[in-house]
Image (tube, rainbow, N blue to C red; front, side, top):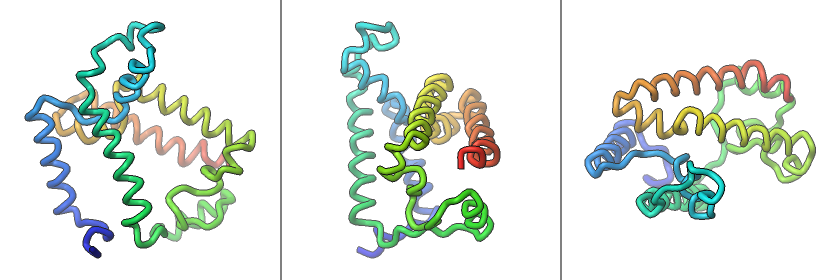
Length: 185
């Protein structure tokens, strides 16, 4: 059982991702998570309000199962297959986060200063989560997909729009890390 709770080496995980993408391409499917939001909105009746949501959502049932598998797999991995929640971070990252006021750095993947319930119900925390969610949702739609769709599926198909989107994601991440995060904390 120990083999499944430890990080797998790149030469195992990488080929498994490549095999998954090959199978998806072989069967005419594209990998991505954010497209499921459109499908869920269509199921909820979004087609009554916008043309964007009028499509045959049943053709995307396989992708909804993929999304459900991701959520369920993530939950199971977090609850039962993660032996240690601590994260190895560089000393420079730890000192930078301490300067911003973060405590217990590396104790979990979701820092309490952002994701705790008490923070989510504060005005600042609520606004950060709300505006962040809107920006991520808008950016995903504007880019025509999310990081997983562009970086894993799009780049493996040698799609130029995915390369441009991935470069934009990295630039956005650098701007957030070095300019916006210090303002927020």
